[in-house]
Figure (tube, rainbow, N blue to C red):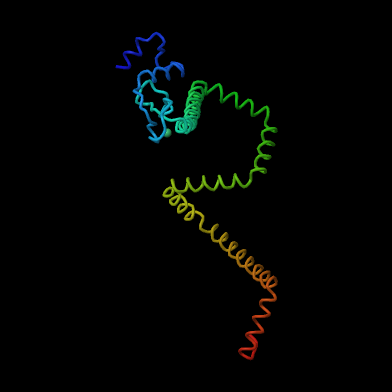
Length: 212
Ligand SMILES: [Zn+2]
């Protein structure tokens, strides 16, 4: 019923009707409830939109008190911002699709002209955001690995069977490095905890009557 009424109204501009007009239209058509439909405590003052899309539909509105209405508006603002962002993203995507060749050529030319500048910028950004980039990369790797696990396992098997000799040498080297690292680490640890080791040694001596 309300749709017919709205269509006959000369102020009605379809779904693009201005905010105020829409509110008036809803106020005139939605049956007023005495109390806030949300908290059911305070007297209702305002008609408020529920979905944040301001549909031409009275079921998308409710009667709220002032405090509930304020809360609702804050929620809807967030929704509107995200919907605008989505709309812009869509538009950009479409624009890119239409002008793909021109844009990619433009990009190439820009890169050739400003190569040094771009590289410098990149280096600066990388050195300033090392930790963030490392974490991002880690996350990316994790996702990639979990998605392509089987493929990667097969690949690594093939690589191993092809490069047996190479890997043997590599593993030997790694093993040597490993052992050397731990030797040094142990030395360092002993030096750093000299007093503790001395105490331990003396205790042991007292108990057993001889050195370790
Ligand atoms: Zn309320």
